Length: 127
Image (cartoon, rainbow, N blue to C red):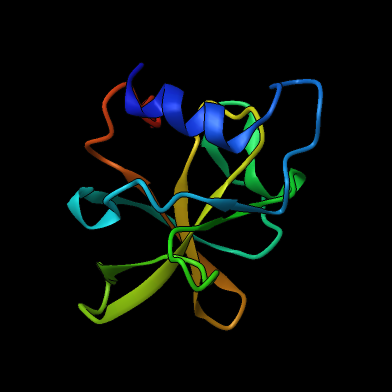
């Protein structure tokens, strides 16, 4: 079972049959070893398909927790426009082709999105 299959198995009890919990424990993933690729910055609510057919604003996001204290895991990224270091939280969308993404508010109501670059078996965003 590759990492993507393991993520899906841990995130969703029975894909397509149950709503996942709002918080998922992923202490077994070494998030610091994953490279993150900048996708875009969009205003909150403006249609944005993280992968074809999945507009992020049409779904509930699931928090990914990877610390024993129950806080969300954060990753460090560099804002490609200004070179500033930012911390973004990890999220998932139930049964989406991308099991995990990083997102955060870079400025007032402007959200940046990053996808994992080196997860074995992860689909790539087209375009």
